[in-house]
Image (cartoon, helix red, strand yellow):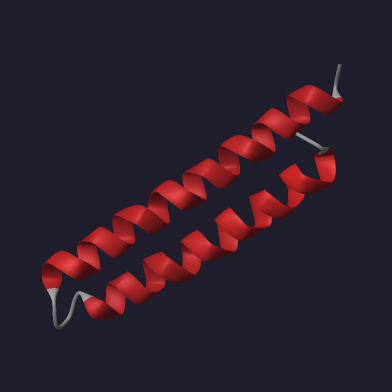
Amino acid sequence: MKPQTMEKLVWVLLYGGIILATLGYFVARTDENAGLLMQACGGVAVAGGVLLIWLRSRIRGQ
């Protein structure tokens, strides 16, 4: 994967995950199951973004 592509994917995962988790927090007030699912998916996206940041730091260090 090209470094530019990886960097774009990192930001999409981080910000998209944060937005989805926040939206899930507010949705959980009316529909608990849907809100929790959105929060979980947002958390997984943020974790994926953090993982890609770590991988990018390992690749550039070589």
